[in-house]
Image (tube, rainbow, N blue to C red; front, side, top):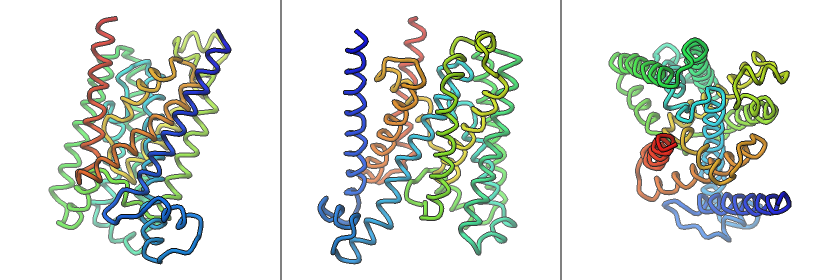
Length: 338
């Protein structure tokens, strides 16, 4: 039986990796300029090809595809961490206000005239400032939610608090929009729609390093995360350092969700939906299996949504919401049935 499960998991990993590679190539082929797969391969391997085609492939489509894959993985794993930490199947960066907190931090950078004027001369400084502000905003909301979860402990109370925090933050952002100039307001509205194509080479390095750091912390926390599934008291009785684990998980969530929100905009429902799809695909609650499954599902779904958004010429946030909402409804009815 155990050997059969191992074979099944190997087949699933191979199928997931093949799907991810296929969608990555589809990302490279999708765009207004018609470029063949052979031309993409030639451009990536440094072969002889026109400078215009090479520019489109290496400077526009490759960063966009990498951004979509990393963002999908990061936001999905952050949702998994929150669902484990709060033992709440409806927890996620978007639902509990984490994305709203990161959005407020980013809004202060994008809409704040003094910050924009000071940092506008250097895009890399502006990117670091926006990312830092998003991290702080996400961390602040996450800290409030964590304190509330320890005192209340009730899933409904935590969800309501998260929604109220999100609503309050949205109100603050609306005030910032009202007092901002036209150019800054336009930039912010475009940012809220979400985009994988606005990340430059330097920004992609920041995004990649933050995501890798967050995923590294997550993988190192597999054992205590498994123990937390049975409650903090049980995890503590088994020798887990709850405070250290909680601090590391918080840091990982801030790095993953905050960075993606800063560079790609608030991505709706993906962090809530993908962990459930990963559990369904893997058939396993062990985080050593669940985290890689979430990475594959998150990267694949985000790239699929990005391809659809580009073909239909609509904001990616609209596509991720339409993809994630049915999963959320399914989770609600499934838990109600149970």
